Image (cartoon, rainbow over all chains, first blue to last red; front, side, top):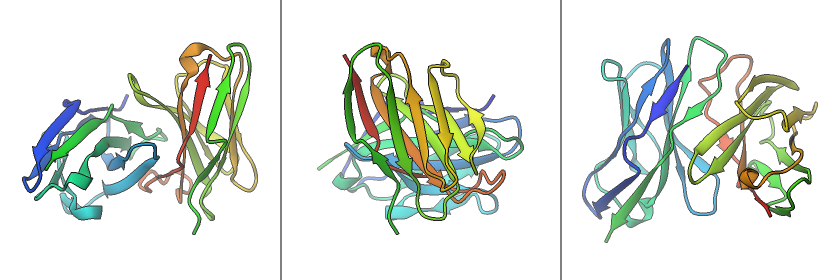
Length: 114
Length: 116
């Protein structure tokens, strides 16, 4: 069965500093990987995805993520955090091979402090 | 293009009642998924539909059911409501065709269900 782990419930970072939100996954085959962000009282918004090809993918709002197959990780990064980046971030995985649903991690709350 | 819409946005129901939630996907999207979001459990997968067929079902009791119509609109129903069903129910649509799991999902704002 596929699964996603986001080991940190909360990440705090100062504005202007780089940020990293961690994600590791488990699938039987190869993964499709996604990051979503949720602002208060709103649905999830798509940030970026890894399907195939270059391990470094760039997404919305200056975010990027690096796919590392050997470490089964897909960490979300941003070089310089903004206060407006404060939100709940979800990593999700889907196995390429099978007809399986998208599975989400439990989410990481990012707080960017001015 | 209009986004995913969900109705109603808020619901208050009593234990034992039943409820129907509605989702209209983005125009042209034929795949619709439903999720339950709670503070303790995160996002739990409920159903996935494509062209009126249920492709996947999550680990929820039979009280939870859903369907998709020919215009891709979807509904989910919860019967005999329990206090633990209080949650934000999110609907998402995507361009996925057949087994196109590489397509990202677009989420609606959710329906906040409170069971008293």
